[in-house]
Length: 287
Image (cartoon, rainbow, N blue to C red; front, side, top):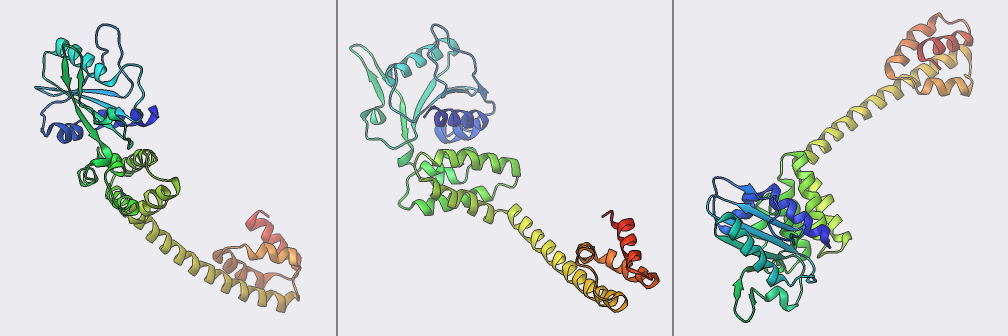
């Protein structure tokens, strides 16, 4: 399940401002992603993100499974001590559980030993209001994991939000993130039904492509009609002059464009035998 946690880490580092607005309710002027390992023996997990604002560090940890070599609470305490010692700033720690579970660890917000109590925040995605995520680009991929009474309704809303992203590359990437995370909660058939087909159908780009394709189809239909009419006319003229034309020659004529048929219609008046027709085809079509 590490791929889901790592995906969320990538989101947090790609859209740090969105996560800080959500979790700290702040509008920071500057954000720094802390990439360096903390001192002492590193126990840093792949799905851990440290975001530094002007006056605080946000420590984010994403959890899909509840299994861990080091107990979660102890790990949070360890991070807190190291972050505080290294950066001398207040630290807000948030553990985000992605997949529904009834395990006590997802409902525990403190580490307690004989002499120490350390508290941190826990967010269970399946309890969150989807509205928080639907209108926020960086958080949108998390929306399928939010609370809902109707999977189709939620995925439909997610699809509509994806469709509003105007930049094609951003929309494609966000849709990919969203589809992957939705797999933690929904069957693949349901995901594909909404997050691929509906997203495309609702998108401005899709509508543009659809309309363009329709216009091209109409144009091609008109062109095919013109080509068929020119072919019928030329076939009648050739049959009148030379009798029934050999089928192999007719196959070569049938694939000519309207313009080529019209040109042949002008030239054939000078033909005296079928070999003149064959010569023209070889010279003008290369076949």
